[in-house]
Length: 248
Image (cartoon, rainbow, N blue to C red; front, side, top):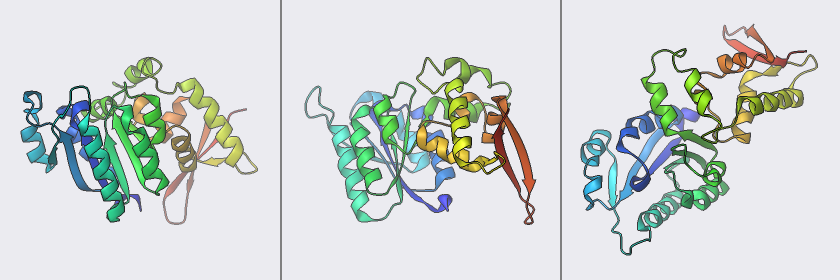
């Protein structure tokens, strides 16, 4: 099961704010078990001084990497080398690469070639090539805002207003994609299993997350699109399965 996956969290301190660390750890705990927790940077720099208490609180191992030459990012190289060492150790099932830097695009692609789950996390400025190279990608601003929001209704409008500006897939595009997926996987009556739709959406859009649009679950999000019928089916095991089909 997904929760049993052992995941190495590798963080680029030069491209991530310490305010996101709790949300990063919490999100990966939902996906699996954080094993390696490492953060890379030149810790002799005064601007990284605020990290100390955060790292101690979350038991994250800081990896020192001096900046040997101006304009060259030695931190990226150290993270990439460690990732490959961890890969060959055979001790993990996946990686979480936390950065808004496109320099990790090739690393993400290589780890996926090796059969690893690769979750990317970064701010909305993250270049598309890195997002596309990951199996899943989470926007740090969305993780933080959703964790701080107690009412789904209060946050429903804001992400939608920013989605085109920040490069997120528009709702209009998602409607057309969901329609296509339903046509491809539905039964003879046009019904498709909701969970399967979510799985295919994640494969086509690595950054797809219902929280980007103000919803915590897939069913309310699909219902909000107004283009689909939703049906609940109770099984003998007393669980409820959700099915969707296109409206005529």
